[in-house]
Image 1: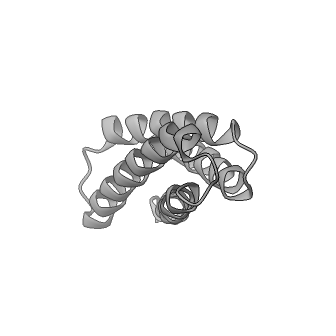
Image 2: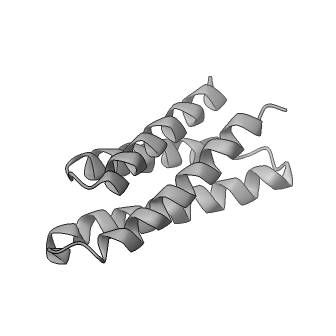
Length: 106
């Protein structure tokens, strides 16, 4: 199934983004984490939407896949700015998801 690896990457990205956003709230300087939290939430939402659409078998998803790759790149960049382990792991999950989006589009 063409979607399988992308669906797995999306699920992993959603989990990492939600965990990261929540863990950021426990960081000492939460104000410093605001953009990270916001980006995590948006990334998880976009990945979730794409995940649900792919599960329906609907074919016209290329624009959303492109957008998802872009949001995952943005989230990876944001999370990479922070030292917290959850941010580093989230950045990796986002990079992998963006990569799978591009493979899907190829």
